[in-house]
Amino acid sequence: MAAVEPRAALTSFSIQGRGSLTAGGRTLRGDFIITAARPGCLRFEAYGPFGIPVLFVVVRGDEVQAVSFLERRYFSGPATSKKMASFLPLSLSAPELIALLSAAPLPPEPTGLSTAPPGEAAPLQYAAKAEGCAVLLAQGPSGPLRLLFGDGGDLLAASLGQPGAELVALYSDWRSCPRQSQAARFPFKQEFSLPASNRSLRLEASEVRLGEPLPESAFELSPPPGFKVVTPS
Image (cartoon, rainbow, N blue to C red):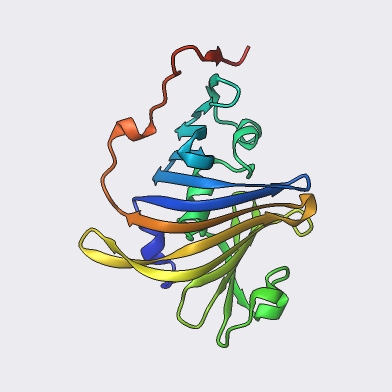
């Protein structure tokens, strides 16, 4: 528990780097910027070659806004898990996405807490390569939650959901980053996969900023001139 408390306390973060999305037998690569503030504000920007914007998504509370530059469309509506999945590769709520991206998926008041040997926490068994690994089991908003910690307390892997339909997250390349008056460790490499649907998202950060104050304008998105505005009927 103590190992995850500093990361759970992060109020905001901004990640910039390179990512790849694999789905339907195709892999798309590009640059990304992710900005988040707890509890439920998230901004995702994806760029193609030469820095051309491809997709911007902003979630603020129970509303999602998105701009597809390829389709020249702007969408605004309720931030349901189904609608979020149409813009982002993971069908999760904004708070769940923020928790995963900050490598602190344990709920503030977890239930069903227990520990288990690494080998009993499938499908994380293959990730338990370091000595001294520990597994923390809990009940999360989307079902069972399994967390695999390394000897130094860094989170190595997590799985969320029922066996056979879980989301698996892997974390590596942990580094110390400035965070206001102190430093915090953050994983510069993250991989999220849905084994049942053969979908995966890989993120490799080149720059990480933690705990910086973010203006409200960071989570606002307006329709660009000439774009078609789409709202739920």
